[in-house]
Length: 371
Image: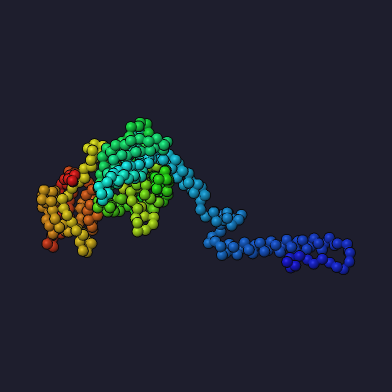
């Protein structure tokens, strides 16, 4: 420590020389200034790629590279959407009965989420949340409980519409899937593991995914997100930063982390409209059984419904479908996704290969059988 201080003089008392003291003070100040300049120059040269806009301290310099106002705006948007949308989100509790090996009844309970789609008590959720339930209880944000009835459900989309006796409730509206962009921010709200009104945040990771559920149903045109989705989130909304529903949280991948799936908003709107009008969903029907081509350049027709649209239009076993309305078909998932975006009665043009020839055949789609 001695190097930082002058040793006391021992020559005996003398009158201090103000000039020497003044010179020492000036010299010390200059030395300190040079050291500070050198350290700042080194920090600038090796710590940053460009001159920072703020230079008051290292913390200020670090934050200057991210727009604080943008972060503040983003946080404000998230808080606003979470607060406003949560009033339209509900918790769903189900009771069902199964039987053990000795045919004794075994009651079980389930948890899920949903949200109001109208002011008079219609609710959208996942089909697997309420499938097989003998009793369905809806709990609103204010803690009130209501007995719900099933208006209609659909296995192919894994969606269901419920109804409770309320009026004047806050509800959510949808945004077209076509307008969503991969990479945009999304929020998931629901009841994961019974933790009511949990909000998670992430991005829209991908579009037009397909997953096969436990019951064997192939759900197509799904959205992928890294917003955390857990058991109990099913049926809750996936929202953009304006509070519009872009998807319905449905499933997670058990083989990785941060991979969740949501039924698209476009699919949900079709399902809701059909159920409200018909009591069930009218899906378009082609009437073919296909298998992916080995080269990944289409799907091979391996069987036909003899009463279906494809058979009537002249499609044969052995044909390879390569496109529909100009859209390339490389797999059964592509085929299913394209067909389900149509309605019964729509006419499509199928491009196929048969015995080395490329043919185009017009097919008027039918309605998929309910069984």
